Amino acid sequence: MPTEAAISVSQLNRRAKSLLEQGIPKLWVEGEISNMARPASGHIYFSLKDEKAQVRAAWFRQRQRGPAIHFKNGDKVLAFGRISIYEARGDYQLIVEQLEPAGEGVLKQRFDALKKKLLAEGLFDEERKQPLPDLPARIGVITSPSGAAVRDVVSVLRRRFPAVPVVVYPAAVQGDAAPGELIAALETAIRRNECDVLIVGRGGGSLEDLWAFNDETLARAIVECPIPVISAVGHEVDFTIADFVADVRAPTPSGAAEIVVPDQHDWLRRIAALTARLARVGERNVEDRAQQIDWLTRRLLSSSPAATLARQQDSLRENRARLASAMRQQLLERLSDVQSMRSDLLRCSPALAVQRTIGKLGALRQRLSSGAHDRVADLQHRVALLGRTLHSVSPLATLDRGYAIVLDSDGKAMTDAATAAAGDEVRAKLSKGELVANVTRVIKE
Image 1 (cartoon, rainbow, N blue to C red):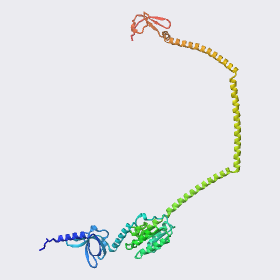
Image 2: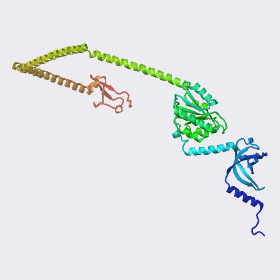
Image 3: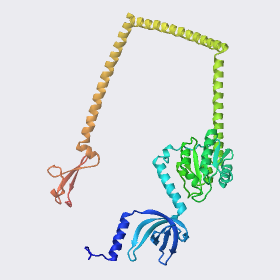
């Protein structure tokens, strides 16, 4: 009898599955496809085999990327995935997550490894890359002289800027000898030092066709090149190690030609604008020099002996006129002083003092007579003014204007009609005389 309890087949398969999945990490497996099945579910089942063994594989639909329909029995592939067991049957299998053709898969691994290595060394850093010249004097092209790339580059350069010459450094761009020839052409261009920029590239192709440009030695030669390098390999979607280490990456050889030179029409417009500007600057300089010559001519003429003599004669005439004017002014001042002293002497004369005293006496006499007359006239005016004022407030003055004073029988002035009665005798005193009347009717208000 067993000393331990037995386990079920399901438990055994489950333990084996756990051990496989935990003990073996994801990995790449290379082999040949056989027994491929494509059920309606979309999953793909096949076996991977080599000369000595085989393993079942399952590639589920949700993991499939790209044109999986292209794979068929007999294809050599690289499968990336994890090891597991299908518990229901106990089948040991590879769960595929990525499937690639074997050739490209190996190359891609080598490409990724080299890319990672050079990136870590800083060969892809933008800080170390050289700028391209604005307008190179000569352009070097390292490529196959019989390929389409050189024709595309020359065609675009002829269209954009035909004045720039092109030097082709021939080299193979495909095959085992290509990296060495590309490096030799690069060294030739450096040694001859006749170009300002180099274009290294070729037309499109498969990963194997472009593999020469993933060579590590070529990459380091591009990094060490003192001449700016443009990498133009394949199509826009193709990337090589040369693209990453070059100073500039162009999507195609034609794109490199577009980058390396400016459009001649833009430069012609700029040259025309600069020519016009230079002409304007030249005209201004000519005008400035003409003015300077005129000024120097006038200065030279003003410094000639004849001009100096004329200025001295003018100065002499001016000084003579100023001297005569000063002498006349001095004589006038002396004459004024004499007249002033004569006036002072006359003012101090006794006869003049007596005449002034007699004049003052006559003036005082006249002022006295005039003052007395004015005083009398003022008093007369004031008396007349007071008389008019007194007359204006006198009752008699009121009577002169047609009014009358009504007196009762006692001779008192009446102011209220209610104090009289019909039949009473009243007197009306006028300005001249009086009237005696009897009251016939009394109107109280």
